[in-house]
Length: 460
Image 1 (spheres, rainbow, N blue to C red):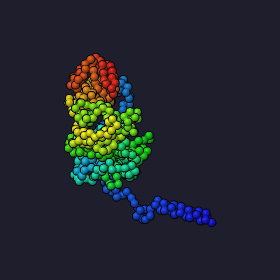
Image 2 (cartoon, rainbow, N blue to C red):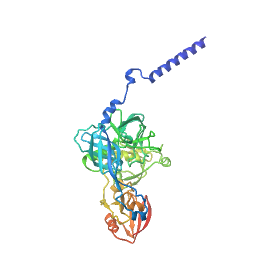
Image 3 (tube, rainbow, N blue to C red):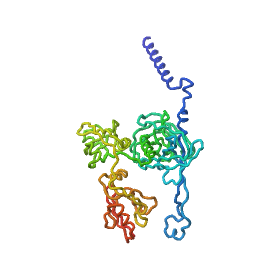
Image 4 (cartoon, rainbow, N blue to C red):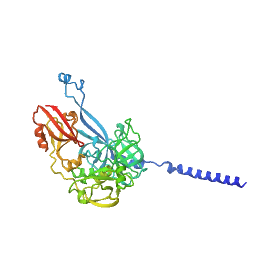
């Protein structure tokens, strides 16, 4: 009888616990049943706009690339007007809009439209390809609805977020999800390589739209998705507003985006290197090269130092350091924690821009040469930093290659360093331009790409 009584008590207790747990899993009042994201959407959605761009695109010839047929059947100019659609976020009541740089790439005309059907012409204030961000200005009288910039560093994995944009051009759409991961750095979308990952549905057309937290503040600019089908697979990425804030402030002051320069080349810490350096796990960024008299050199950094924190924030890898350091601004100092000889140390690094010596002297190369359609620059620490080249590299670099240009067809790429042309060692953009204007029977070009030398021999 005693055993039976204990069993009855145990079953009764378990039933009570199950009932209690179940009571927590369902709404307990009408107010809880009607909980909604609508208040956040009402505040945030009016500040998210559609970005329409018009551009000139080249229409393919009926005869493809056949030179014989195209010679006899040229027809009219093979260009027509094209358009693209993306999203943007108003971040200032005066009408500043932040969007992705790829949304307005090659645009000849930009218009923004609000969800209430108002539409305005917009002008491009600043485009920063390295972060894939651009800032537009609405040509109209404000004030306009806008979103305040939030603090993405306060986000935690699991926090609720809303993505607002114009997917597939169907009109403004709101999707809900959580923060799936923070500090994603292995996403090759932009040089910042530091993203908020979310499972809120992001589709083509959402680029440049808003990622909003539950306080109704802007914490990210939606920029990319991981997909095999072209639609959302629940893996989307947003650029944190820490980085967007720098681009926006640069647009307000009318300058270009300026980032602090460490004056050192870093590498990721592998498991083998972590073991050699006495680290308990392979995180941080190891110093592999230091520029004489640069900020790192003056701060006392040494080769083989492992950077573990920037102003108290942990550094996971080289890309993570690049993002954290870039968001420090260019005034004052930053405290960097390093591991040296198995012990932590803190060094103070001045926040300053890389020097531009020699001057970049950017020049567009003549079309008659293999360099036609390129812009070349003299290499300096500033240019090397922008193009992610080795710090010690000098010479003349190809900074831009136009699509469908002669240079693209012969295989030149941004970042190529022109070393020798027909026996002349190239020392400046002025010299390269002078040689490129000549009518030569052939072109023998030696370039350096990713540390390797490549030779091009072409007919004149």
